[in-house]
Length: 68
Image (cartoon, rainbow, N blue to C red; front, side, top):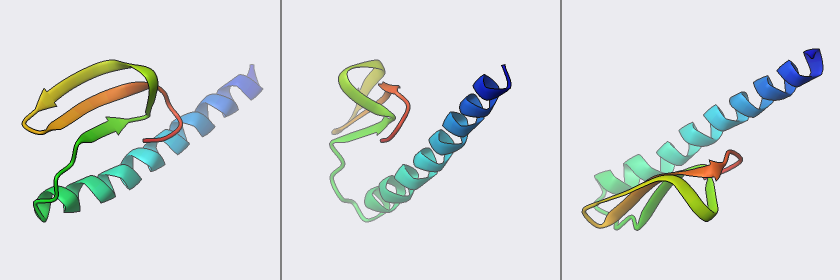
């Protein structure tokens, strides 16, 4: 059980770091009026958990919590 908790903590920690990293790309791009086609948290190789298009940008949450 302890290994499972440690693995979950690692996954959560990496996910938070990836989200912050991706926001570091997204926010300046929007501030400098760069076109952003997609902004997803996590990967969406085949389908996404949530997807919504606002303006020219498609926002969503992918199902694979390893990257953005």
